[in-house]
Length: 326
Image (cartoon, rainbow, N blue to C red; front, top):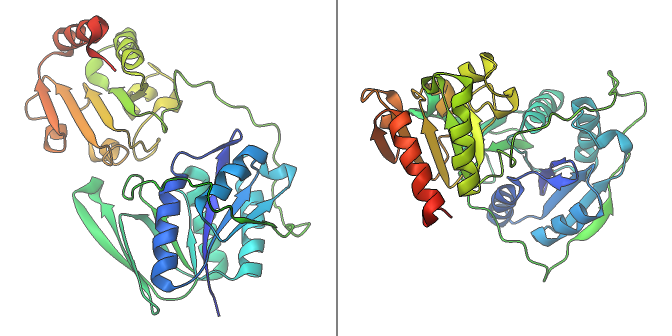
């Protein structure tokens, strides 16, 4: 019989993904509710990453050591993780809401012939099934997903759950993960070229200052960079801005870009289309600056400023530079 909760701990460049400790919260809650054990799979992490994961309170940490797992190569990660799942037989699998995590989750669900609950904002589990809710239509409504056949695979929504606190008082047992079978990879992965992002990691930043087409031109983003630097934050952008080539596509936030969940999200010249808001709606506080009082973003913002950014931002920047920042 399937048993245990298994968390996929994604790493990038030797660092744990920013949302890992939220997954630990979900894992602990489910393990307690179901009266079972919690396990974490580390694929491609270095020694420091493994040490950090051992502070999660998991009963066991399964470490896969394979050079092919050093990069976000879906085929390799799926093969390794599926092999562990077959050996461990978990009843619940918790995946990160990242491009790699979501692809592996979907393909794993297909391979195992089970259901998948993506973008879960609430999770309720009993011995007979799991019920999750997820945002739809850009967050204006919620859909209910019911999973019955195990293992239940769930992808928690970012910031829907509080991040767990690491504790070194209880070190998890280290267990070597089984090697992936040879001949199972259908693709080959060459050297991975990492795109150089502007400023701090967008998905880890506590403050994000994002701009839309209302910024008028590429040069206007320099103002956002200055404000982000004063706040110790990162710069983001809407898809039209990235499509226009004003900033790197690595800064794109939204349905087809990155999902961010900072403490403060400042949206400048962004109308608030549902495709964009799906990537930032989990932010603690949303501050919108737009000269159009009817802009949809004001319906979802915590604070709103109706005005021309050319007048608002310089005053804001000067106030921060004068000591009102961090």
